[in-house]
Length: 467
Image (cartoon, rainbow, N blue to C red; front, side):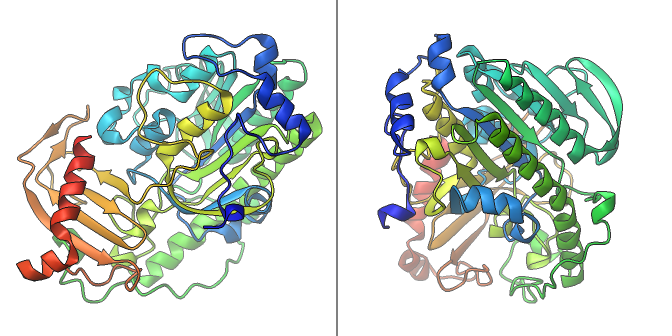
């Protein structure tokens, strides 16, 4: 890949001009146990991390201002993923830089299993950053419990209108549309930078575009572009798919409805992102703010009959992913085609801030030149009841994807039980079959499996799950 399509800039090698170079060379790497001095802290970048809810790729129509800023004047990652397509596990991976099998939040009930000493907010606060959280935190988190390592917060009990919040320790109802409240609370936090010289970290996470996908009143009737589906919507012949997909009943009409509702909620997110850009510009902090935008998981619009997340098909784990940091040389509008994921966010932020984490991380800094050839994506079934996706793990590369389903379930604390026996397998040639219509392992002979390279893929997947 040409150099202009893959920016490889560390915080110790800014290419954004003389001022940025001077700032980089003036700031030493900060060890995890040491707080930064006021002078060093002032030179490090601010961090604005925006995480939307259930936002799949192919939703840029609703985000023209966001895309113009973060992709047009930053980096668009074209092959962005989450390592578990479910809210709490994915967000825990964002915080920790670790796969769910390492951080322990394997389902939405297990949020308290996250080791809070391993989170990016902990490291930043310890190193002298002012930290704030505005919006959704972790599923099953008790609203009255203050989120650790955030100096200021407006923690949302998920909802769109007149929701319950924990604001700096006080639980209350705040009237109004929650995306607007998230925006305004964030703007107040940013405003304090005019008087507070500390660098800051803002974790901003509106409820859009999660169900019930209630739009802001002014966007309730907005027409969205027509959509005629894609070859996987719905897939007619699913004989080669696992049982829960064979039984799926989602239609093109369902996909159109979900898509339209998601796009309408995201229009308010776009307004908020524009307001953040305007505020940063007014404060003179636009250049040295590292901005990262990602969806916490994707969502299926009737693909293979499925109208949710949780599955090993591309619409569920591929997400929009943007980054901008002009002072770090990442402000020119480039495209990065590496396989990247939510586990890379914490390492990127800590790299930019010059902080060495105490706990190991599975992700790698996006500011480095590291490029992986595949990604482990995993999912655990919660409970033993019928229905829903079974536990699975998947080897995801650019040209192929191999998935195994297991006899494993988890309880509310994330503890895994079961035999671990492989119950079903899928293999897709993503070059010739990008919509994952033909499972090449269906009725395949041992010789055909060998020709596809399945033994080696199975061994690599087993190694990834164990590492």
